[in-house]
Length: 355
Ligand code: GLY
Image (cartoon, rainbow, N blue to C red; front, top):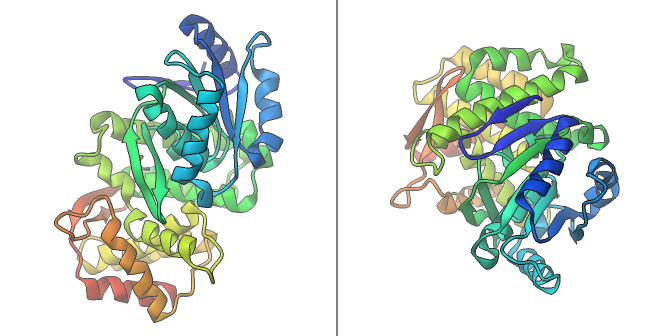
């Protein structure tokens, strides 16, 4: 069985994951099993999931709307109400089957419902497989502020079945790739180099790449589960990425950007800042920009939209004394945290990177 052992839970890959789940359900003797999913996954992924669940398992499905716009208190509240109506108790388990919104929000509800019930993540998007479902961050957005409410609560286990990706839209695949690029850039130069040759990789390579990304994330989280220091490197590209994502989410004129798309833009910007702050070479910056803009189209923002994006920086969870703290690269495959960057340089980065 292909698996990664975290210090608190197991991450199981492929078909054997379903046998593992069957045994887990039997051994833990959960009083009730709830499956949280969204409308899109209910149609595309739940039939595959149920076909592999041990037949004697009884469960209730709770469905939410699809998309980041629904990662709200209102949706979390409705899930809590559904669990209450369906008589969930402390020995119940919530199995999240979906992308990052479902695993983040399901994890959050499981962490607070009756002060905590078990949660098992079954990620169905690439982004959720390599990032959201692993490492115990749970959360919901508040008034457009990303993950403003949340907890660090480890899941009881994570099941990764890459066959879910067969129905994943191309833009969602790309969004997941952004987090994989990030793993290479912050931690593993040779992995970054493999990913830059993506055009030559086949889908058979995908499970190995996902496995490697999860290994990197797990290794970082194991050293710093509650993000006091090292884990912050996983936020590379996210300081400006989250600001851009929140701006698009709340804008009435712009269509929403996927999380991974916003993070890709953030990684180009923060690589530029890394170069300008004397940590990366010009060649390294341009190589990152070429690879990322080969996969993600640059966004086009007016000066006032850049200003509007930067307003969201005040809500970044890494801020100290109201000052944004960036994760910068000091080489391909290595990152430093708690870096302060002049505001004028941040504004300049948007102009230099996207024009
Ligand atoms: N997504 C970043 C982290 O889990 O720390």
